[in-house]
Amino acid sequence: MLTPEPLPFPSSQPPRAARLLDTPLQSFLRGCHATFLADENGAVADYIPELGKVDPDPFGIAVATVDGFVYEVGDTGIPFTIQSISKAMVFAFALDLLGPETVEAAIGVEPSGEAFNSIRLLPDNRPFNAMVNSGAIACCSLIANAEGEGAFDVIHAMLNRYAGRTLEVDEAVFQSERATGDRNRAIAYLLRNHGGIKGDVDHLLDTYFRQCSILVTARDLAVMGASLANHGVNPITGETVASNYAVARTLAVMSSSGMYDFAGEWIYRVGLPAKSGVGGGILAALPSQLGFGTFSPRLDTHGNSVRGIRTCEAVSEAFDLHMLSRWNDVRSCVLADYDFRAVPPQPGRETRQQRILEARSNAIRVLELAGKLSFATMDYVSRRLADPAGLPDFLILNLHRVSTITDAAMRLFIDMLKGQIPPTTTVVVAGVDSASPVAPRIRALKDEGLRVRIYPTYDAAVEWAEDQVVYRYGALSQPAVEVELKHQPLLAGFAPQELEDFVGLGAKTAYPAGVRLVAADQPSDRVYFLLKGMVSTRTASGTRIGTLIPGMSFGEMALLEEPSVADVWSESEVSCLEVTREQFHAFQEAHPRAAGRITHNLARLLAGRMRMATARIGLLTG
Ligand code: GLN
Image (cartoon, rainbow, N blue to C red):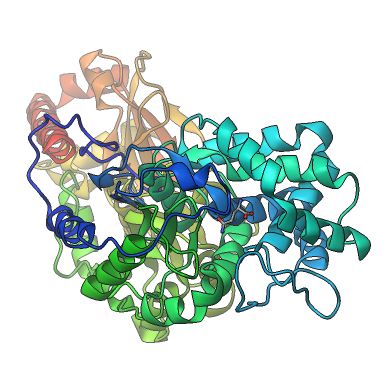
């Protein structure tokens, strides 16, 4: 109900001994691993001497889904330095920390088409983008300006949140790069010369080199990628790691520039926003679906992992994961669209109410919606409701199976309520519990005077809508006419004289709406015959049990000297005939036969209510 439900499947990899069947994707990844393991092309990066020492052979593939499952094949637990992959998350972090204006003023978003360590800048002396070293160093400088000495710690903590665990730093790689990183120093001095960065260059580069020396695994990269794919929410920890805005912009720059001078080829062939690092890792993210993490240290001439590229190409091609090849059909969001001609009224309705509901079966229309309500699906829903002839008195939108509502969909929904749905139709939103973030937004619309209501369950929504139909077409359609007493089930079988004498006993009373006429568990001395208006029966805590309309009685328990089982409230102005127990006893003396009828009728009435209660329990528990 608008909050992702935890899946029964384990969210992290089970112990290797656990016997789980291979899903098709698991088998496919296993096949990729076996095939590409044989590819020993490329060479480990050795411009950082310590990196030159790493074992070139490990190969790991991990895929994390946005519902929090991680597939792992091969060496997915071996740590390696994150290197340039950190640039993506650090850019997103800077956008959130400092705001887009500050970041965009300092760093461009143009693809450079050049190697990661290119020294070239844009004509206005900004780095091309944050995925190449110059932009990443500028980004690091922005964070250092804001965070001072603590800059590395906040970057480290941020990456920990993406991975969902505490990551270590490879001190040896850090020292090695620090000792040999003159090209990065040159870039930093050039930036400082143009005013692009401030402060001590060595100090700043320590933060940058340390950021690159954070140790991750292929599994970590997959989870980080899934956090980006999952609009900034780590699907395993549930923690929000970045805003939607920052994630979308970061994925944009990754798409155009994440793979250095191979970026154009990559986005054309593989079609996934991605970022690689000279440590041998590749992170890729397919929005709303999954994150990839691969690790294999042998790099091609662009500095991208050879086996990693081949794996991503193979998976993307096999399953058509190219981000610009999408197949969603908006129509699948409407599971059902019906009125009540095909549906019997909720069990527990008294016969007269049932007849009203059957006669007005087109007064309630239900749309059962499912999945994600986005711009396109909500537009489709609004077009289904564009024909005024199809708009009933009550339109129930059952969102029980809806997982998310995007801001765009919410906006269309609000505009639909304000501009499209006429005031003769009340929209009843069902299946939204009060903890959902959508609930206050819908309640606010109600406060603005729009005809919209919200119920946690479909049954509660239907019950309310049915009550309204009964009230509108049963009670309100003849507000001036009082129902004659001979139609009261309690007085069925009375002879005309008996009826006349009985009416003569009681007092006719009128009440405004909103009065409690009978209180649960309180002794009462009278029975009420409803002549006009509508009353509801409720539990002492206020839950509505049912609706009574003219021709029905309540408070009959008083005749048995028993307290009422429910509260009875007037829902409109009502008029009743009230007969006290004493009056009834006097009547009994004079008309023993008729009094016997009442006892008989009362037993039938109570049996009928028992049947309704049983039906309702069946409805709730079945
Ligand atoms: N630390 C490396 C550098 O700045 C990162 C480069 C990379 O992974 N492409 O040279």
